Length: 318
Image (cartoon, rainbow, N blue to C red; front, side):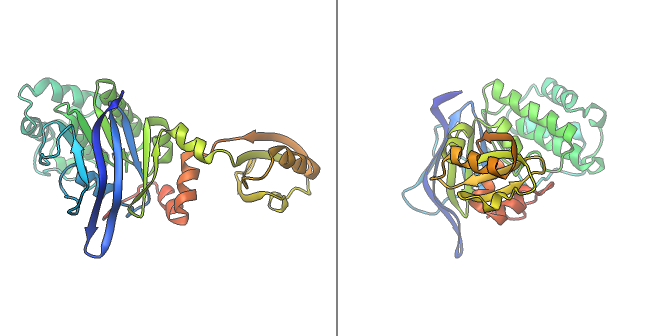
């Protein structure tokens, strides 16, 4: 990963649809060779931003600019970019091998057979190679569309909710494929509602909320910003009520453990003393909040609802 080279540079762009501002004065930089995660609730502007990077949408006139792979001017058919849109769409009457050949040739890959065979084997689709797309399950069709986006070995891969609707086994297979893209030098941008996936996979995390950037950086840097106010505890005692302890702003009960968010001025030693007066303290841990916790903290109930969806759909992420 080359932090000094940016594959995508966005400077103060805005996108409106009528009276609605979908993206508001947004700037970000995606380092070469990184996995860069887009997170945010439904309707926050993730898909709109990805479509502007792809030149499917153009930002509003103004001083802002977008540079992708060093260029300000290109079209959405750029052979160096692979794109998996949120709205899945394949030619249903075509057979799997035919459609992969079509996309390979469309992106300028002439010697397509080794690549097609390799990807079909890797994603366990060899037996489906001669089936029509309309005969595939949703998960199988999604894997075919993923292959179509990466078949020509693009330098930049943009994946909009790539894991949505996949079972755990296929999620693992696709996740490993994405990591391999990065290992061979590609830069990957993907949006997701799964905070666990973003935490484990992404070198950088960007969060957009109501069209504006609210987080952008490594997970470690983001957690450092929010990580001084979280304590995980377990206390045995009938008189234990964490809500009644001075300095505790919020309590999240996980059963065996409780997560306490404390005020900035609260001394953790004073908190420990207060807990010990309530009962026997069996666990006391200063902890960094998870990305899920930070996500929910910023966006509130709207983010909580989005983060808990198992098969999230953004019918229109404008």
